[in-house]
Length: 449
Image 1 (cartoon, helix red, strand yellow):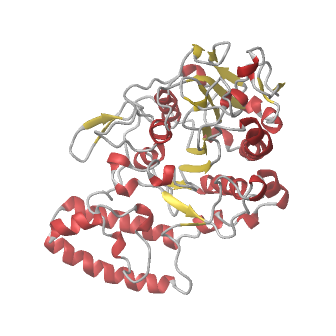
Image 2 (cartoon, rainbow, N blue to C red):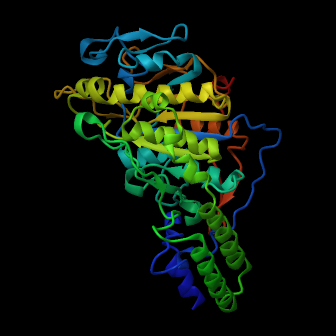
Image 3 (tube, rainbow, N blue to C red):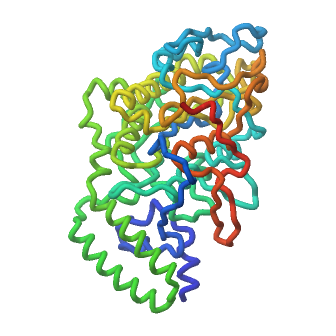
């Protein structure tokens, strides 16, 4: 019976644990995976950052037309956009990112990032886990690792995503187990966009699975909690595994604490923000979602991830970037950096803007750019990263790194270093296999202030 109970629960997603309906609180019964543990930090490593907001550009952005323009390249490569100066001396970016140009003195561009996987799902996995995907092991996302290794604030979910990456096939807990999957926000936009490339702002943001249904009270929750405790005692009689019963109890308490707390609910109340600030972020779903991510981090969330789709521009790339993609990103990403800075939060919050790969330097016959992982750029701001800095270069045609090449596992290692974690510390898979966080990653000291 106990073995069957374990098997039945292995597929339960973290986001579904607290759904309160016909099954009551039985969704809490996930074996073995719910014992939250604090981790040892790297000896002598001091955390500069407390949290991460990842802005994910799903589909693979044409960073050669954004952060690493090649105006001297041949016509079939350089594209239609012109570079403009920014507030950071010597740094130029696309003319369609004027608001980002005004905050580049507070950000870093890594222009020499590269890998070898020009395919959406495995590229996404590599970029969001810091490990090359392999059939032998599912690696956890950066958010799940942070959730496992960093102390959680009371009353808020540690890791929140506003959109599931690649329909839920990336961004999850991997070998850490279901307990470390992200909490999913419902009511957020950020897809390809509706009319005019934008979606309406979400009316009711909420975390899936930890919102009480209409008419359901905390008193009723307490009654069901008592019922669950009775079930727990029966299950303990069936299976005396200390890890199982203690783990259930640990997560049960954490989950109920989030339900009873008003911190998450308040973070989603965007009406508390001035109208001008809400408009500064952009009144579409993506902009308001990023504002909510900032509020969640302010409340104690460790990692918040939100994605904006539509970047897979195999045709009409310049039209898509100039009319829809870049104006939307420019508005919201610059607002986030500016807002965090104004609130004194930028030094403790890492902003990470990336996609799964870049696009081909060579423009195709459909006036598009195809998948290209051999060269790409990402933007990092805050949390101990240098300000007004460009790391590395690509060659004259943007085909490959020319100086100081960087890989996704290097970026992941550097982010975790700023969080005060040893990027090479060992974890264990459920089978007992030791696995380093980022086995091949290096901390890029030149990126750090």
